[in-house]
Amino acid sequence: AQSVAQPEDQVNVAEGNPLTVKCTYSVSGNPYLFWYVQYPNRGLQFLLKYITGDNLVKGSYGFEAEFNKSQTSFHLKKPSALVSDSALYFCAVRDTGRRALTFGSGTRLQVQP
Amino acid sequence: DARVTQTPRHKVTEMGQEVTMRCQPILGHNTVFWYRQTMMQGLELLAYFRNRAPLDDSGMPKDRFSAEMPDATLATLKIQPSEPRDSAVYFCASGLIITGAPFSGNTIYFGEGSWLTVV
Image (cartoon, rainbow over all chains, first blue to last red; front, side, top):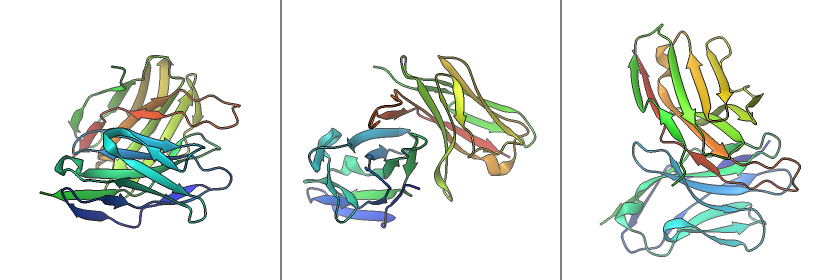
């Protein structure tokens, strides 16, 4: 069965600094990986996905993610954090059997001014 | 701007009452998912439909939960009778999933959720 792990419950970073939110995956076959963001009292918004091709994927709001097959990781990154980036971030993997998404436990990003 | 629409946004009900949550998927999407979000369990898949047919409801408590798609523009999730442990945020999501393709990386889009409190 496919799964993702987000090892950090919370990440704190100062505004203007680079940020990284970690995700590792476990799949059989090719991984289809996604990042979503959830702002308070809102639904999940799609940020980016990796299906195939370049290991560096660019997404919305200046976010990018690096797919690393040898480390089975798909870390979310941004060169310069904004206070408005503070939210809950979810990594997800497509279950190739059910075609649904299996989500990680989420990482709360707190960007301090 | 296409979006998944869910109603109600917020619902407070008494234990034992019936609760119905509704979802309008994005026009043209053939797959609809119901997820539940709680602090303890995170995001759990309850059920999903493709072309209105239920494909998987293994994540759903069968005795009290039911999910249907009366037509392509409406999906419903019903709880009867509701219990306090059902308090959660229920998300509907939709996507265009192409079956039989070598891969299916189509994006799934979420609604704003139905925030349910059962007292």
